[in-house]
Amino acid sequence: MKQIIQHPVFGTIEYDENYWTGKKNLAINGVALMPRDKKSFWLFDGTNNVPVYVKGNFLSSASLLIGTETVQLTPAPKWYEYVLAILPFVLIMIWGNSRALCEIVPVVGGAIGGAISGGLGALSLMTMKGRKDVFAKLLVGVGFAIAVFAICALIGIMLVGALS
Image (cartoon, rainbow, N blue to C red; front, side):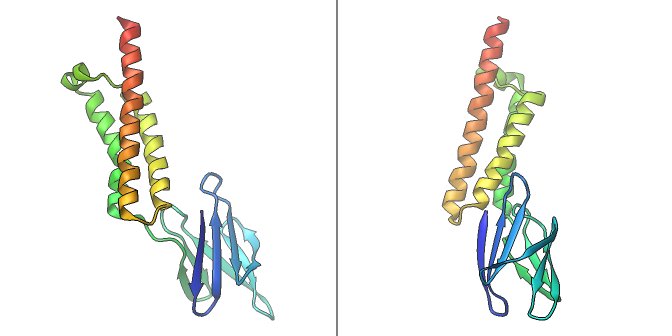
């Protein structure tokens, strides 16, 4: 996910992070910074190299430490984004452990349902972080919850059909 920030002291800061591999790229005023290690870079200020540190990541909140200056690169997730990301997991765990609810619509729970709902919940959080509009974030969260329920219900129905 690429972020471009206009800073009054440092100018244009471009931060790019691949959320699958965690690889980070950083450029200030169009000049790519040389990587020092996985979370730090070198900034040449005209006379010497200054270490630049990236703290955090795209999902939690990334900030840049240049000397004593801290620059916020990505905002922290809002509380409702966390709730919408955890909602599919909680829904499947409760539904899968209730005999009365599984008689209505059987869903796969346990390790399989937890893995499906946890993985898609994390994907939901990543997708919501990429959206700016609150309504779009809500649609993404609810859409992922419906998709998780549909997938777990489909697997549950297939398991019940295979066993009976």
